[in-house]
Length: 144
Image 1 (cartoon, rainbow, N blue to C red):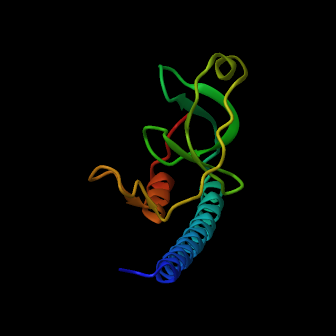
Image 2: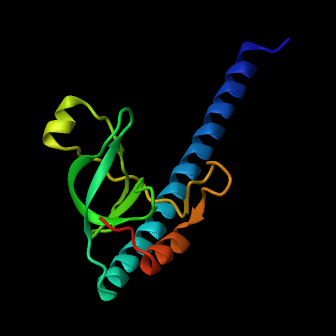
């Protein structure tokens, strides 16, 4: 039978190990976001240089049909218009709550952390390296 002090030491050790892992994961996500943002900013410059103008971005509601105004301008990354970037290098998932207020006043999607692998963990064939996706949009932009 374990002594109470041993159990407390074990619990404290487990908690510390968990905190160290969590900090490492946060640092890795931050580094990934910084690298991805640098790629997006470079791509935005390439879009401008190639004469590909930004378009008014619209979001889709989580439920229901149609699209919503956002007040954002940028470039869609996927043909289905589910992902976009703006001129400042922000990355957006273009899905929002579609309540009455959003339908009347427009939606305000918040920037998301940009990944290096878009769609990681999704269905097979739905994931892309960010740099490949940006290059595809340079060659074949999604129209407004």
